Length: 207
Image 1: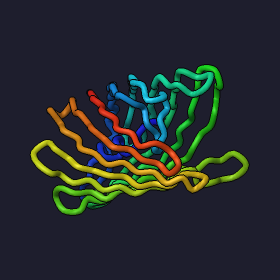
Image 2: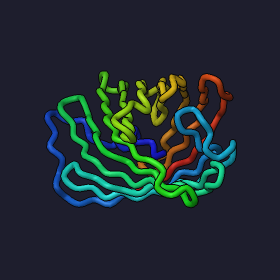
Image 3: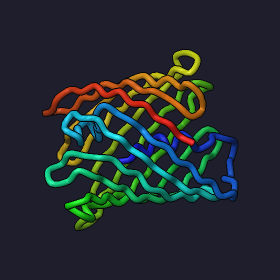
Image 4: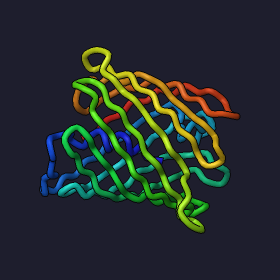
C-alpha cells in the first residue's frame, strides 16, 4: 500500500494555510529491497519497484501507485486514491480513500484514512492516523503513531508504531538521507508480532 505519510509530509505547515488552487502534477518512483506494509513483506523478501503519479489542486488530490508483489496468485498491485489535505498553524491533516487492485484477485478492498501531523519546533514532527475498512460496516484496520526528527543536515531519524486488525502490533525505525529535493535514500528496520524482523533499503525519486 502507498505510504500516505509521505504525501502528508509534503503538505506545507503554515499559519492557517489555505491551499493554492493551481493544478499540480507530481510523479516519482521508489526502488526498495523489500516491499513491507504494516510490518509484513508483500514480496517474499524480494525487491520491488514502485512508480506513482498524483494530480492536485486547491488541497484536493488523486493519484495512482503501483508495485510488484508476491501474494499467492498476484504479482502486481495498483492503488487508486484521492482525498483532501490542509494545514492550520503547525498541524497538517489528510483525509481520503484508497482502493487496492491486484492483477488476479481484482478489486480486493478499500479503506478510508485520516492522518495528522504536528510540527514540534523546527526539526521534529509527531504523526498519527487510522485506516478504516468498510466491508460489513466500518472497522479499524490500522492505527499508528510516528515521530521524526532532523539529526543532521539532510539526515532524518524516524519511527512508527502501529496495530492492525487482529491486534498484530508492528513497528519500524530508520534513517532517511536527502541528497536534494528530489532524491533520497532510506534504511529501515521492521518488526511485527508473530512474524520476522526485516531490514529494507529504499531509494526514492520524486518530481
